[in-house]
Length: 202
Image (cartoon, helix red, strand yellow):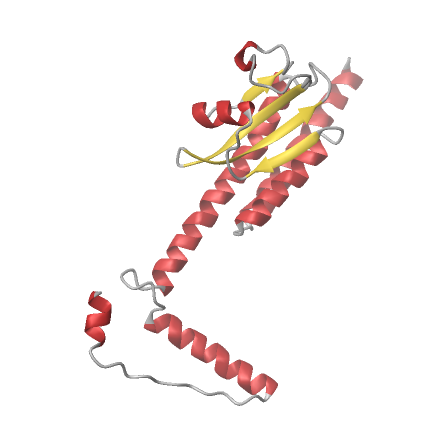
């Protein structure tokens, strides 16, 4: 009994360590594409024998449509026999699938899906595990969006969309340093536009 209990606890500790590591790695990413790649990699490790996809937009696939409309995870034990998708799936299509939507501020930003050609392949535990990793990816995607928005507000004029004076000064310093490093000639062109207020107003 104790040997089995210790084995079970060690397994849980190992799983929690993996979750903590994934959370730390996700917390450092600010590129949405890299976040999706990391989620795809982790999901593929969890389900190495199955087909894993991370979708960035809803498709005409009935399972995608179902998840996108309801904004909740989906577990299908037998695609061909599931009453929710009768007449919607391709004839001969069989197997099982789990799909979890990636929700950012209640908006669907994609989904992660695991499919198998075998029916009954996935359990509620598999779905919960996928939900956990998808949720961490969603938090990172939300952070990436927020960072992008804040960065844009700090460096772009909200009216014209042009770089702010501060952004120009920072870029100018970078270019001067680059010019000195590679011993290149640096030119700065200043242009005075007459009646520029009219351009701004339009």
